[in-house]
Image (cartoon, rainbow, N blue to C red; front, side):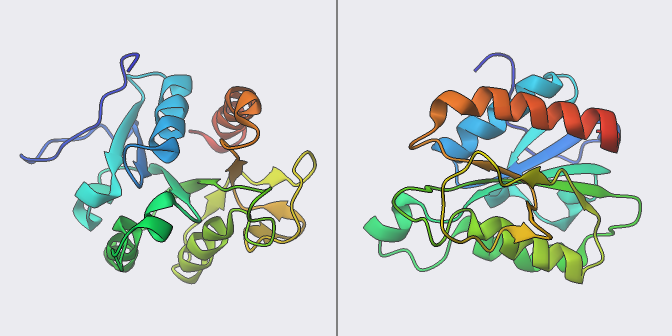
Length: 190
């Protein structure tokens, strides 16, 4: 899709620390769609897409600028017997990453109409984990323009990353992603 390829790590590669690692999951849905959009806004030569299913701490260590993309509730949560997600398996590996000189940002997908009391909660869960590891998280976004009741993804009156609602506001996603990438580039050295 438009020049952005998913990176695989079958053999050890010497990664350019200037590249941005975009770790996302689950694959094949809106999270991947938005991850690809983020990568395209940075430029295919500047960003690598890595599904969290394929990642571990060694791969995260290859990047100094890291973006995590996840959803709070996915179709698989409701339609499957699956008890764990790719993120459930990936979260524990983060404590083994060498976080020195790394900066992170988060985007999260949610549905503010059908789940207004849990809008992008997973961003808050990931933020708490990273904060506990003393990892800098940048790219906070204002809550204005969203219509929800509650979110665990808010700290000090702002979302801890970019919230995206592909179900009911897909027409706003490209601009929101573009503005966020510009913020990350201009203000945070991505």
